[in-house]
Length: 233
Image 1 (cartoon, rainbow, N blue to C red):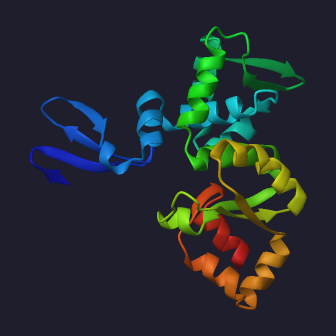
Image 2 (cartoon, one colour):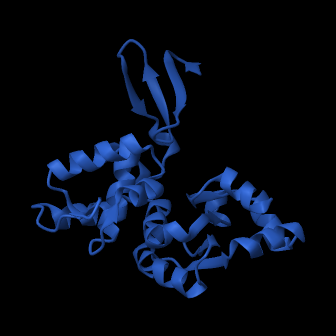
């Protein structure tokens, strides 16, 4: 869209609205579309780097291999590989090879480790924090998403975070996984957990709650609208 000498468009990679000034030949984010946390995070980090750092620095004692990180980041393999290479070379993260896999984790010996960890925790959005919290379970999850007031953009100070998880996991595992995220966010997280077969059955019987989930807005943490539709069939 052209507006007063500017070209306004949605950047599908970084998932932000951008403004392009043709005569200046560069692109800047339209900050009016972002929350305070997103403004800081988008200014400092691109989408993929933000997701990688959020995962590794909110799980500093754990390590993850490439495909796990890619699944959480929701970016292409090449993009994730470039970020891991750059962050490793900078000493911000470190990689350890075990067998045929290289595992990555935050580097506690980085001179600015404490400062960077604090910055990431403060600027990561709710989606980033929950996505990272669910990462250890991601290979057993088919879909996970935020719904309710946060997904509608109508949350208030006391709002809980409504979370739906579909996969081969137990309710207690999900509660344990999001416990740290709950403390970081200062908000109660209310998970609903369905095995894939139960979710499919509830869709088929037009369960009121599941029908509302399918129709309502969502912020996907694992999977996407296509995966959810597949599970519902």
